Image (cartoon, rainbow, N blue to C red; front, side, top):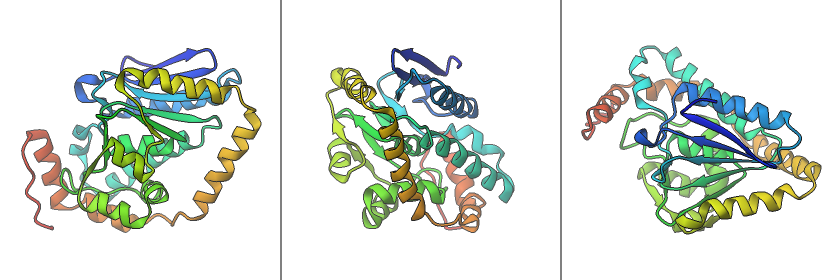
Length: 258
């Protein structure tokens, strides 16, 4: 796809690598667009049975969206366009007809968690941390669809605690909470994920496809309508502008509730 998002075929497996290790694989729009193209290729190729997502460098799966892209936000429509565009990308990943696996090594935060939650299975290393610490970083919010995915896995009380306290869950706690399926030693993660992927690739494709789609429909039935007013409140706040500036200036933000 590009130097920053790699797409490889390994027999029946497709592997997407987020390849900005110097930025902890923070996602640019070009990378999001490349992921959509990769999803299209996987669905169009009957020889591909499983899609694996991974981050380069060993320190991050994806640390979120590149914060520099938020500096141009000025109007409510900027905020709504961003969340709608993000929702289209994440929904496309969720809609891939084949099973998808996130191989998490290092931090998965913000948009990285949204990508991981849209996958069917998640495996991580003992050193990995997973969370959405936006309440103490840039002061934005999750879309309703991404929040629903989090609540589906954690339940309302745990999801609130994760977001209110802006926590990054350690790997074993994330496993116990149901966010990840298995914690695997770092040197074994890639092999373990491929072992599971090869096992799945040998199973009946139609059974896998209809099972995945049935579960997705059950989850969609419980998802609320979009709440644009909440997105606008968060992204148009002085706190959000302060959070973005503080992040880029590498200092702690001072939130004033404005």
